[in-house]
Amino acid sequence: MSKPKVFEKPSGVKDYLPGAVSRLRKIEDSVLTCMDQWGYRRIMTPTVEYYDTVGVMSATSDKKLFKLLDNRGTTLVLRSDMTAPIARVVASLLKEEPLPIRLAYHANVFRAIEEEAGREAEFYQTGVELVGDASADADAEVIALAVASLQAAGVSHFKLALGHQGLLNGLLEELLAGKTAEQDQLKECLLARDYVGYRRRIRGMDVSTDVREKLEGILELRGGKEVCAKVAAYTQDVSTRAAIDHLCQIWEALTAYGVSDVMTIDLTMIGNFSYYTGMIFEAYSAELGFPVASGGRYDNLLQQFGRPAPATGFALKTTRILDILGPYETIGTRVLILYTAERRAEALAQAAELRSGGDKTVVTQRLDASDATTTADSAQPWHELGFDEIYTWTTDSDEGSAR
Amino acid sequence: MMSERLKVAMPKGRIYKQASKLFREAGLPIPEDFDDSRKLIIEIPEAGMDFIMAKPVDVPTYVEYGAADVGVVGKDVLMEENRDVYELLDLGIARCRMSVIGLPDWKPGHTVRVATKYPNVASQYFRENGQQVEVIKLNGSIELAPLIGLADHIVDMVETGQTIRENGLVEMESIFQITSRLIANRVSYRMKSTAIEELCKRLQQVIPG
Image 1 (cartoon, rainbow over the protein chains, first blue to last red):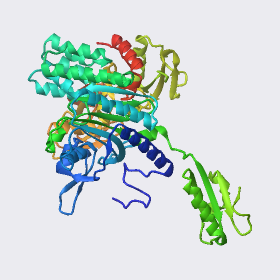
Image 2 (image 1 turned 90 degrees about the vertical axis):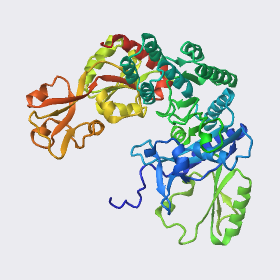
Image 3 (image 1 turned 135 degrees about the horizontal axis):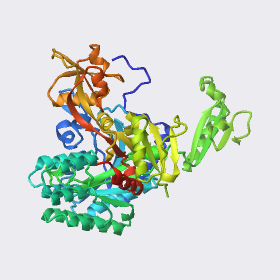
Image 4 (image 1 turned 30 degrees about the horizontal axis):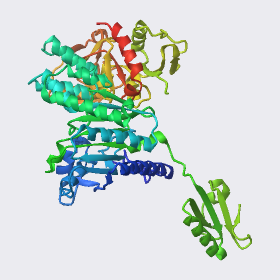
């Protein structure tokens, strides 16, 4: 490969300019504050993890994991999500701490380089994990917190879709008992969102008309609370019925939280991560073609780290929210203090005093140093640079004269 | 409240006529042809839609990124592009097949070269069949490749087979059947679910069996 030009960077990674950073920080602050208020404590984990532990268990497909070698030849990964690292911490450093444990994070995560726009190799997620509570209320809590977080982030118009991995698996297992290949084929179609392929596969199967109709009916299991009642007619299986009951209870809790009006149940949804075992959900905003948040229940992940515990959580795709909201203009007064060497002390004293107020941004700029501003930009009138107040401290000006 | 008007990515050319006919049969007031065929965005408020006239191969891209809510596109393009979109309906139009084509008297040599507009489809097919081939991407007049010795086979769409016969080529294997599909963006599918479901229902009633 030819040597990159000096300004080039690897594909899929981004610089964040001041406007974008202010916005990102604002989103991060508001969302983490919201999570604080719900009792989720913030945690940070390393960017780099072992491939054989967190890498394998993160359930990001192998070719999408960003892999590195350390100096002993051990394979490392740049974390692809925060769920697996947090599971590791909960099972090790926090293993004496009683469950349930509520944790929040804001972190950059990585994917092996994707060539196309909108598929970043590094992006930010803000999310929570609730470990040690298997109840429907725990699921409803993270969904309601996802809604609150989206509102805190400033996303106005959004909807959520709620599915249930365990319930779908149970239905397929009951309708196609023992036919695991067929079940997998159907799940692959649903994961690829290929309803045409799903219908075709069913037509090609050697099953009774009743089973065929039920399998086709799964595609229609969308809507509000009525879906729970509808799907109940599909199954006699005890654990599937328990899953339906769990889903109904989540819905009731969401109604109590006052968020069920932005929710739709869709039982054809399959989570992107293979560790999901129970409910899964995604949030969508009208302004963006991709989901802005997703989450779900993963009851088997913690035991792989040696501390079996149910868990549920979600992550906001914070970088995508940044795309919706656009750059953020800092509010508050911006002050410019211009000075020459003789009156430096007075100028800097004024700056310190103004800054101590806490609500003003104060920039100081020396005027008479020959090497201070070497570019033509300095010819631009200072008042055009977006300052609300300008003070000048020079020998021929009055004390801190304002313009 | 946001508008429920649907942005529909429509493939320019061959499929458009059949697709617009199907939409009309479904009771949507879609014009058969447009006076100014160079127009890229066509507003059809009577049908609650805006048509985005796209090159067929780009339809899944517009839909995946949400520039269009739904789209009409051939299964050949969907297989090649492998985009993350909902594939909602088989529209049953523009029926044809993806096939391996070659000269009738061809003898296998050491390296088999395959020319195609669909490099992903071709590579996957031969890989899954345990055959090692070199895939060459061409952009048109694929039938030329075996005739002038650029490739041993081609992988291309076959509708009637007339072009193949006229060039003295034979269809060796059929890879999969192709029809046009209705696809939807992941977010639009939720945010504009009422409009999209209504469109699906209407189309489902008139899809040729």
